[in-house]
Amino acid sequence: MQTHTSEFDVSASSPAVTLRFPTGLLGFPDVNEYVLLDMEPGMPFKCLQAANGHDLTFVVMNPLLLMPDYQITVEEQDLRDLDVHDQKDLYFLAILTIPQDAPEQATANLQGPILVNTKNYWAKQLALVHSPYHTCHSLLELINAPA
Image (cartoon, rainbow, N blue to C red; front, top):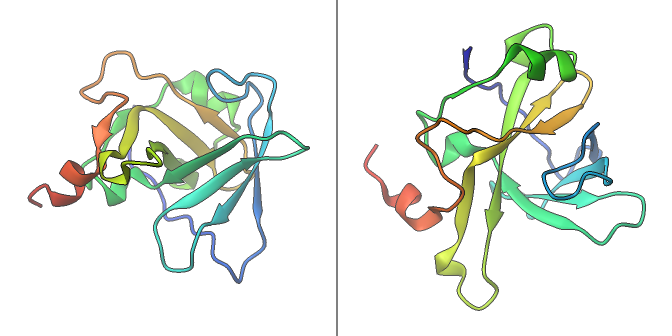
C-alpha cells in the first residue's frame, strides 16, 4: 500500500508528545517510550529522547521536507500493529546522523523510517527491504536537489 503522511507538529507551546514503540527501535528493542520535542522553535529538526531514564536521543525530521516525493509501502500488518484505522493519521520521521565534528556530512535514514499513528501515538520503525532509499542520504544533497 503506497502512502503519504499527514502533518504532525510538535511546537514549544504544545506539551511534549510521548511515542510508544511496542517493539522498540531497531537495535533498541527494550526502549519502548520516547518523548518527541522541538529542538528549536521554527526548525524542522526534532529530538526523539528515550523516556524512563534511558540515555538515548535521536535527531529526527519529517522526510517529506527533504524529499517531497518520498513514498513508501506500508504493510497491512504494520497498520494493525499501530491500530491505524485511517491512513490520514499516519506520519513519518527519518532518523538523522549528524557527525559532531562535520555537520555538513549529516545523513538521513530513509530506508528505516519511523511510522507514527497520530491518534494514539504508537510508533514503529520500518525496515524497507526493496526500496529506492538507503540509510545514508546526504542532507546537503537532498536540500539542494532541484524541486
